[in-house]
Image (cartoon, rainbow, N blue to C red; front, top):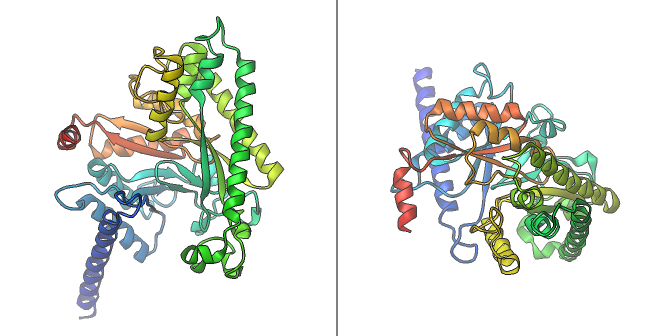
Amino acid sequence: MFRISYKKALQKTNHITYQAMEGFIHNLNTMYSKEGVIPPHSSISLGTDTSPEGRMVIKNFLEAIEAGVGNEETPVFPACIFKMKEGINYNPEDPNYDLFELACRVSTKRLFPNFSFLDAPFNSKLYQKENYQTEACYMGSTTRILENMVDTNKQISTQRGNLSTTTINLPRLGIKHGIRSNETADLTKFFAELEEKMDLVKDQLIERYEVQTKKKVCNFPFLMGQNLWIDSEKLKQADNLKKVLKHGNLSIGFIGLAECLKALTGKHHGEDEQAQKLGLKIVTFMRKKCDEYTEKYNLNFNLMGTPSEELEEKFIKKDQAIFGKLKGITDKEGYTHSFHIPAEYAISVEEKIKIEAPYHNYTNGGHVTYVTLDSNKIQDVAKTVRLMKKSGIGYGAINPNLNIEPFKLWKAKIMNN
């Protein structure tokens, strides 16, 4: 009798949990609060809780995403991120390996989840077993939270966030100092102006930070009243926010590394090994400057590979007006995100991961590598996730080829809209 009662209670609890996850996802896709018509951007990271309750939540959340939000529509939010960790869900003998298999299955149908890798060297250095606060946190399409150089005793991914991001247009600098303007690229002038632009962005981020920190606890009753930020419970209603916001990140982003390299060398990093070396030199230089700002101002300055559709179009239109349409650089609708290989360039999944992986180590404010698979088989998704992990990627996303089933319907809808 006890076993029967326990089984029924477990089934009921599982059903209620599924309904809760389903309701949560539906709510996040129908709360049009951002700009009046856009649901608020939200992200959920999961996959490492091995408790019975945690596993039940993870399983039902993934299954609710797989079910969609009606009429076979894929939920846009929250961005679901499955955290990979050896000993937890990476190997067949790991306790949550079945949830990894489920995540791969859901990915073949719903784009999500994306995958973050806690064993990447830059993510594992602060990891503490059974302390989820030390698990690197990725949000949305790129943002990463972990290190806290303001207080090294509070290097956690919870109760913190990204305060501001300003992105640098790398292609413009490449055009100004590259072979398009001179017989040979002037790298000395390129790096000099890049440093100048980074100093300008740093000053702008500090000025904005000062404005933010002058706000008071009473201006943010939910964020501070619920103690969602580190040390916010220690503040009074009339206190300013400097004591808590100092733990946040100030990110310097960049866009269009591929077009920048094309302007400087004639080839991007997917086409030429020397261009790849220069690309890594540029990003290493930018990360070094961010580290210098962190030490000088005792604030968390980070480098971010920006993945913004809005900026890629805005920047290229401005540069087209100045420089015209330069082949392989400005003769398209938008610059390439971050350090990515251009989408129009034919390259294997393996080679793309190999080339982009080293950049993850330097972009501590956020990074992502996207790959497109010509297959929607679970084993192919799992194989790609493992390749990302072995290559040292911190955060990866797998996109489907819209010409294969079951994504032809999606493609038709996109074309009609």
